Image (tube, rainbow, N blue to C red; front, side, top):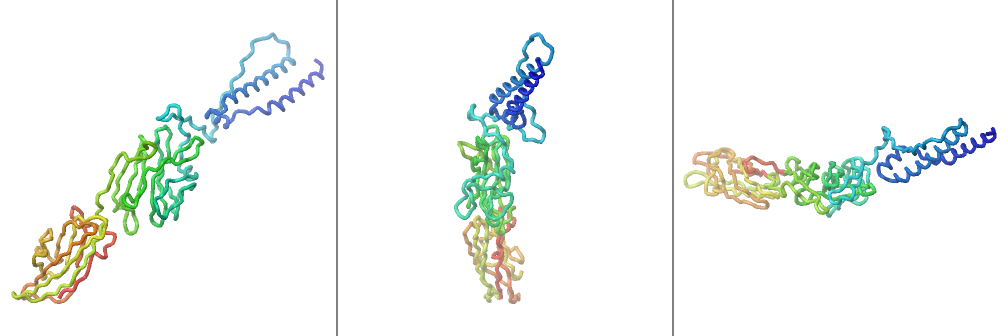
Length: 401
């Protein structure tokens, strides 16, 4: 072969490298991710194999023209290209979708939702209850409790729909002042990987529960929510609220309660006793003693009954209980000192009790003029005193003379 022919062949090979090999895409992280998702696998393999076959043929021909003549031998098979592992620090391939429990041919949307991803996504919440509230359509959850924000209070993950992929479950509050309605919402991904609302698990109400304290998703997909009967705030400490763990499962496209109590008992703190009383005027009796009466009214302005009511009247010890008006007392007031004590039975919400109580001062005993406290306090079933949200109206001052 002449020198010119060799130069012409080299020029043809250089042209081949500039035009054909420039189109070859070397498999990298993006190709690996596409391969893991099964997209374009056959097309990429066929195209790459074809290019390598052409390249291999050209190289062999070039070497044959420049080296010694050889006997024909077996042709090597076209090499197979294998995907390289994902490099450290790059995005990991998406996991293979799992089959759903309901359909063996359907696949679950890929990708567990992290708290950061949920905060960054635009989501639509189930509607808040009627009245002033927060936006629900195309909003972003907030990491803090600023006013009129949809605050992400608590977050957990679990397979709530049985498709083999963990969903995100969030406790969200519409912040209004020191309170605002709350709801637990489950989120999933659609087939395009977008975060979508799967459904509401439970929400607060004007009645009960008025508060949601915590959530927990367990292995069987049950969403456990700690609910409270009365919302903290306005003088109501959170420790006064009765708390219950209730479990919810996804059934027929919506969540239903499957475990835990379904109602609350009376909250002993949700009472408001109000007392009023008349002054005590003592007059002379035929036997030389002095007697008089007072009228005491006790009303429960709260939402729950008081199991028992403790009435205390701080008159001097020389002024003793007298007459049939004390029959309503569970104890014996005559055996008490100062203050005189009368324990009353249950007083329902919105109910009132009126007592006409007599007093006597023994003959020869002098009692001047003064002031005395008439005080009422709620008690629970164990006769322990119970705190109220507002207690200044539990005491009234009377005059005796």
